[in-house]
Image (cartoon, rainbow, N blue to C red; front, side, top):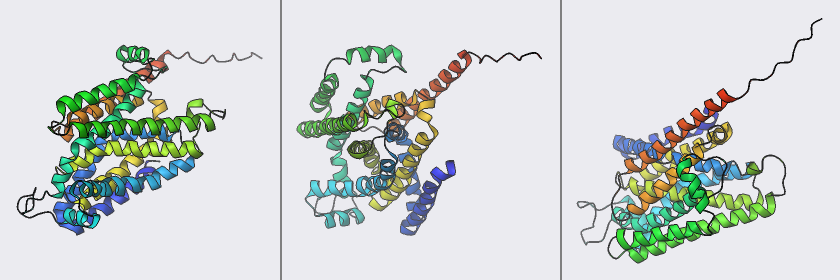
Length: 368
């Protein structure tokens, strides 16, 4: 099972490291490996959330996510997205933006001799709007989960009161908007307030539209299907398509901090694509499939809760990072700690339920 699911990821990792060595020698190989490890450590909560959505999709849409989706993750987010940011922010055409990425200025790493900003500088300067969009999308996802009525709660002392107050209509939008206004007013760098507000609003709108369309088509097409548990009815057709879009936007939102953080290590788009894209994204996809195939989320019931709390923490960190740099190790450790805690408490709950379960009554043996 493990070899079948992770085999391709290991193979692509080896190929990527070989390509990195040929491209830039031992230094490029080491940087690629570091970026791959960084992406995997930052994205474990992403894999858990992906698995909660992926298990609701039909086999066809699962395959689309694992094939077309990986192309979007690798080339869309890790290659084209940084180039698009440079293209839009600098006014360069795509060819010149790529040339700027592959041929950074000599001497001062931040600027050319004529004072024009480098590729790395443009990406870093675009961080406020990138973080605002991704942070608000993830915050809406977290609030939607935490206010949702559910039978099982993890941190019951806080989750149950939140479920009660979550019955107020549009409370998640109110809270998210308040956090966005506070961020733009007190955290955003000077002159960036309006940019942060617009980007954050677009992040909220994107979540509402994609999530709403997915729910709409799921209700119309799938609710009449009475086969199997209602929460695991497989989404097909338009419902599957919008779940696929939802997953791609979700993956992009998780990727923002990794892509921006990668520029603290290297600005070379080839190494970023190999490390973050091929190695990191492939392992996240494999881990997602493993969680679905093994039924891990059903067996360890608090994992989904821990992943959503990790998302909430990541969203707030992204919003805070608009004004103050937050080391990537902090972001990664927060997510890991919350998910490990959820896993441990899930194991404790499982063992307690097994101990409390009544023993099966054996049938008496008829004496003859």
